[in-house]
Image 1 (cartoon, rainbow, N blue to C red):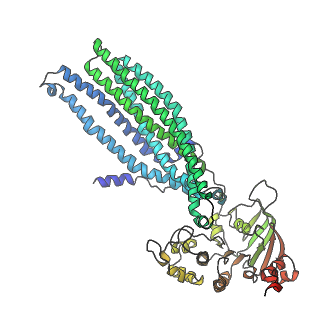
Image 2: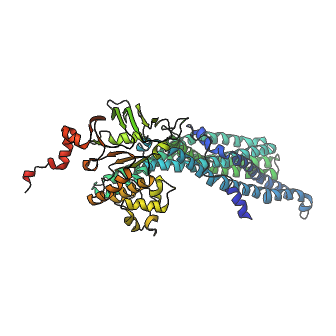
Image 3: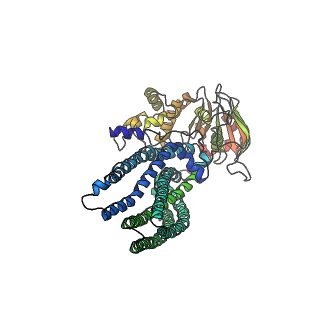
Length: 618
């Protein structure tokens, strides 16, 4: 029965719901409100329940005073007859009201709010961040971004719930205490008033410091996490280079910076607690002295003394708890601020408000006076006033030195970046006027930097076409000459074949095996436009020759752009385009370019052995 009650509270909210406005706002208050407003009903319930619980706790010293007064004024044997009804009300509050209030509050907090809010913040933050431009991720550590998303969920939940638990609870409790003590003797409010003033000053000074140093600590933690994750991600590079302790120093520097930030924060705590201990001692002594003096002078009854002193003790105990929680709240404020700066960045690569899906009818790709530079404001462009039309079904090869702009042209067509001048059109449709998803769905890409997801081979192969059958998947793997390799895979958890996981970025496969899986993935996707960016660069000559026939079959009826430094792999293309500093310097078939004796012919001669001094070979 109780499990059904818990299930009800568990399922009040979905942790993967999306807000109507999917752009988290900048600014601490708007950012936090963006998430907690989605839980406003249960937070309102919590405020009511915590108020009732705080009043019930504030009544405990009153009950103690009442019982002491009963004992002082009632003869033995008469207490239940004379005060039975009052005692029953006390029992009702202690046994029913207080436990049921806090139990219901526990259900609301622990089941409706905590797991759902924490993961909803993470999900909605991830949903937004994953739609950032490629440049966004190129400029940051993946581990640092992930850390900010993960910490944001807990920081917001802890900060808001502790504010209700501490600030609201304390406010209600102090109000009740002031009302009760004022009725006993107004002089009792003097030490409490002075203590509240000093406590407020202490709180006002220390909490902003805690928030600021916590933000610094959070940033240093994100940097430290980013550097550590970067080391693990590039473990092969670390293992194959003798760095002489350089990598250790690189990570150690971030840990030392984190320790410095941590020490600054701990210093604030030390000063804060030391001052609070002295304030609390003064509060208890002064309230106790005034209460006993009042009893000694006959102005306070024993019941009043028994009420006043427990109130002072409760306020003393609560002050440490409030300060601890308050410091935790402001630490979370620092974490939220730190996370917000990354999470709430506006998206820079957006679909237009009227964007429709790309309709590919022929597969024509047109670069119309395109200019682009990765660093705006810098002189010179990676691509400068570039014009090229790839006819439907035409197969062209892009040739040029590294940095001449070949891969940039591909990334612009995929709308990884937006052109700064001109336009790129597919079948007459500007790629900026259609949805990014539809553009990328229409282009199949095999790149030289083959990266696989740390998932099963099956998930990797079907990533471009989720609806593909296993039979289609296996056929594509066979065409890419990788089926036998896949069937021999076994991961540490015992998964085999197509169910085996390939490791982060596919590290459990060789470079050639990863590239064959990538080719199979594009074969299965079967997009109308095909881009081969050094697609066979990691393959040995025998495997490349075997796959070449399958690529030839794949290219039939498709518009193809192939990039290769190994010119023999693209010599049979319909047209070769030679680039230099983002401009076309030569254009024609393989035979035409050789006959012209230009840049391409020079490259071909070097790759064909012309750069060797054959007379020196024995």
